[in-house]
Image (cartoon, rainbow, N blue to C red; front, top):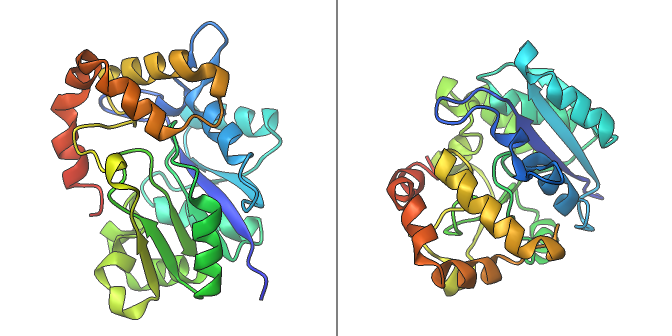
Length: 250
């Protein structure tokens, strides 16, 4: 069976620490938003057949309908809390066999191993392939649509939240799972490249300004070397790393 990979991006503007994270500008002068950069990067990855936005209900999220129109993307609108159902609807709309999952507030994807891991995912008939232990915000997951649908049917309310693969992780014996890890130099619990706080946004804007000529494929290993040469930036995000990693796979 030919497998069809659809990148499903769950989008919402609500946020207690920073409102409208996906639509915050990475490049203020040029008006390049986080969601723009994510979509542009995903469009460079050959194995991704389509990108679909899974938009939360609410008037405050209507901007994502406009973004979908701008970028000629399909979209679904669904429950704010039940993120898992939105991802499933994205897959069903686009005829996916599998979902490529990244988050809408994490601009710097570790894109280099995506193609190779997708091929392994297909060859081994995996239900889920997780790139774990990566820098917060840089990882990704492949999950079969069947596995996501089973998670929704059999799981509890907590499994239907933004913790979309929690049921699969907690019931690993029921699924064929591949767990991969990045190179050791990219296992950095002192770093994060996701935007949840104003300090995160400040750091990501600086990173983008340095590497914008490489966009949308900005290598994470080069970002790490840049941050190591600028410890003041690491200090800005240090207060948020422990919590981020403690909840990453829960």
